[in-house]
Every structure is written in structure tokens, then in C-alpha cells.
Image (cartoon, rainbow, N blue to C red):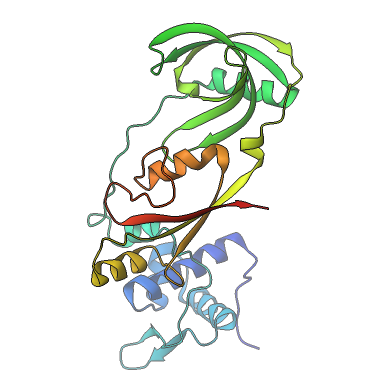
Length: 267
């Protein structure tokens, strides 16, 4: 029996993922790559490569002349994700990779903790809140019922005593929290509990080649992109895709690339 690594071990999994990343992003890998990265012996690196062969038998082939393993025509990664390659690219090309910096949104731990405790205990809480919409700073009472992220900042969904309805609030705009009280929600939050499926297609105003580019960009199957979202989060979803908040069927996003074909309730 050959010499294999224990693939259930965390450090071995890390080395096997690195091996696969080398094959994926550099187009080759050998024992020295692994030895240099993890400061292990050639024997251990050989065992790791042997273990990877067991996990992904047709992925790599060895070139005696180059003394390297190369991805085969059947190579497909099984250990690393292709959704976000930033960490792998940063490791291999540290001075050749960059990202757009988004200013961090302030979150006070004590505020977030109070909201979380309220949600768990089904309490209401008094907050001192800045509102850009109403251009006010005032105390109000809310009863938190969920948390949501729009990808840029966090929101707390809550029953608003002022409006007698469910509203979204930004924890970053809560400057102080006050007393808590036991609260029985008067009605269910149907917008949070309900989901819709939005079908997007390339904007029909685009020419054929541009529509093809949009389909490739969004990996559209059968020419459409389907996204499920809570009704309460539909506005955030559409804004991330550059649609106006009240976008409906037939609307095109501000970049002129995506069009809403349908919005259907999810049963």
C-alpha cells in the first residue's frame, strides 16, 4: 500500500487545497511547491500528492521531463471554490491583485447585542435613532424580529411602534438603547416570511452580441437568471443589481444590461 496522508486532518486538508490551487491557478504543481509553502519533508509532500490522486484520480498527470504534475483535460477542482478566487489569487500574486475598498459601516457592539437579546427574548426596546428619511433624531420603540445584510450594511427588521408596521432600521444609526419590555407581535411579518422569484434577462435594447455577453457574465441558463429573495429584501436585491427601488416587470437597470422579465411568488 502506498504512503498516504490522513485526509481528515485539518492541516492535510489545507495542504491538499493548496496543491489543487497550484494546479488550478498556476497550471502545475510538484513536491517542492508544497514543501516550501508548509515547511514539510519531500516524503510528506509525496504522501499528500498520493492522497490527492486518490480523491481526484483523473485530475493530474506527471511530466517526467518537467518533473511537475499538470492538470489533465479532465481536471476539475473538488476542494476549492471558484465563486470567490480572491484568497488564492492574493497568495500567488500578492502585488498583482486588488479590490475596491468599501468604507466600513460602524456597528456598536453594545447596540447590536441589545437588539439580539431583544430578538431572542421577544422584547421591545427604546432606541435613540437618527433618520435621514425624516431628517430627525428621536427616541422610538421597536421590537426586533430579524437581521438582514444588503451586502454593504446590516439592518434590523422590527415592529415600529410609531408606524404600527414592520420597518427596517440601521443599527449604525442607533446612538443609544434604553428600556426593554415584553412584547407580543400584533401581526405576522408576511413580507419577511414570504419569498419571490425574480427572473432577469438581458436588456432587450441590447444587440445580439451584447446580450450574449450579459448571459455569459451572469451564467444565465436558458437565457435567464433566477434569484429568490424575501419580499422584505427585494428592494436591497434590486439595488445591488442597479435597479431603482420600486423596479417592476419590464424595468431595466441603470447600467442598461439587465431587464426584469417576471416576479413570481414562491409557494
